[in-house]
Amino acid sequence: MAAALSSKLHHTPYKCIKRIPYISCSMQQPTQTNIKVIINGAAKEIGRAAVVAVTKARGMEVVGAIDSYLVGEDIGKVCDMEDALEIPIINDLTMVLGSISQSKASAVVVDFTDPSTVYDNVKQATAFGMKSVVYVPRLKVETVSALSAFCEKASMGCIVAPTLSIGSILLQQAAISASFHYNNVEIVESRPAPALDFPSQDAIQIANNITNLGQMYNREDISTDIPVYTLKHDITDVQSLMPGLLLAIRRVVRLKNLVYGLERLL
Image (cartoon, rainbow, N blue to C red; front, side, top):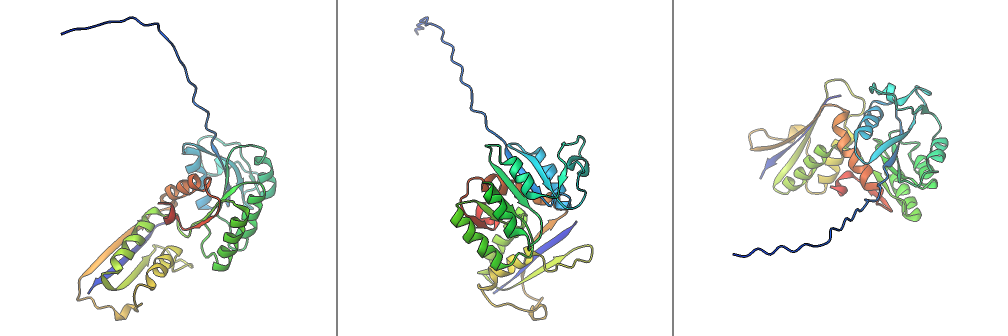
């Protein structure tokens, strides 16, 4: 997967030795338990990348893999890892949640599924005392609002991330800052292969955040004979989204409500 997202903004002498008894004191640091991570949508490209990233990360471990595809297969082997993780892919979220909930450690469910199942998935995770990180493009505003109200009432943390790309968020913040000094903004998005989900959630989020700061123009309205300030961010593959995912997993365990957008954690 490779994608490019850019934003163009147009301008308007003594020693005393005293012997003392030798005292030895040893202190043992309290053991910090790893965050248990369940990947829902583990067989997808981004799910497999998440399994590898979490396995390599400090302070967390994969304990469950959910998907309706490749059921029974070891997720480590599916991800082409050197060693099997001895974690089979299971198509039963409730069963995995019930098994993991026996542990007293913090647990997080990462959801890569579908807009139609996100609400129920978060409710199930909450019922077992687990936090959620949701990265599901095209999530409706109504679903996010319902999840926010539910998490607030349950005092349970949840992060809904329209994008996991830290670079995209930094581009967005720079574009918003620059938009106060330019008359119009052009958001250009490109991919090497035909995509059915143009514009992407990243592009939509940038547009939504700067729409109210000025007027929106069509491409033909933009003159090319004026100074142009260009911001560009390239996403080469899903691996570039993993730092954002790991950040979300580490932060959500401290939350007691829903946070929308990874930028609120930076």
